[in-house]
Image (tube, rainbow, N blue to C red):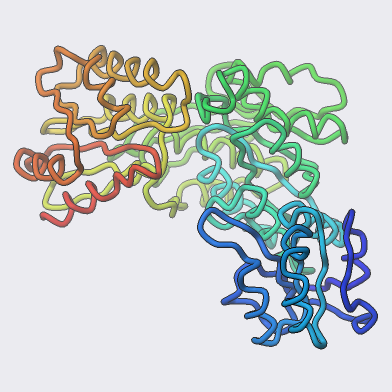
Length: 466
């Protein structure tokens, strides 16, 4: 990494204490973790939900780090004590350290001339990002977002990983408020973008599907502003509005209509889809290694990007057929003693639950199918209605076993009245005990809920039985 004091002077509204002593200072890294901050790193003090980085400024100085970015309000309160410990150290004072982190990341990103692909969408962002990066890695040295570090802190930290060996970057962009995607785009400055879909996510803040479409659509609007290229999911009615957008190059893909890249699911092998993809005269057939129809969409997205960046057809087929998504707790099939458990506990919203139920319905199993659901959070005023709608859907689809946990999921339980085996539990321990008692060889159990519900406890408990 090559970041200088002159670079930092480009931050808006800053003040530097002791700057005259470090005119030629170079940084080899940027850190927000005091435990990992080295001597030549720039430490940025971020106030989070559990920890305030400002409380560790003195510690990083004692450990040898020479520079820190701190908030103006904090500095005013601690000016006397911190100035005593400065010695040959120095501080950069800013209004907001999170915004400063983004500004520094933008400054650093501009040192590189390379394609950046922004990945947004309500569901499947991380899986799609990983699949795209895997395809591109056949030909290019790819930087990708680690895990789902897709927010105002995660995106800058990803960009700080850029070096001269990288040919392309695949950056995941997350949001739960209006304006966040636009802000992240102005940091990462993608020339390419892909929105997986528009679904019922973060309705507590985004209100409804139109609000979600507006928030996620900030990626496409940014690309329009800078004459970028947009990979368009033509199966999503909310994204079709960009089909005729000016100042935006479109590459369409989908399973339903005529697109630049067309996909078709031709069958399943062991719950894993077989997919056929065509782009003009080019045609690929691939047996995917990941369960569920969602994996076929991730594969189609990856193929669309792969075709554009001229990945050889045979290599593209090899990746689509050979890549197994490594994201834990995202639609992962786990088996133990002939009991099959679908661990989809990473997150949950009405659309992802519906997709999971459709997959479960389609799977051919010898035994019973159990639906185990925890609360879908961040739905705001529509939470009760959406949980009730999920219960009605489960009943309509003909499932015979529904087990729910959580305050909001009680509405799912009540609205599914009439299902043969319909139970609501006040704690996960009792629910797990019920499963252990009743689940038998040949049964399949779907477990899903929002991240903070920690539904993986149920998965682990059930698997550990066998």
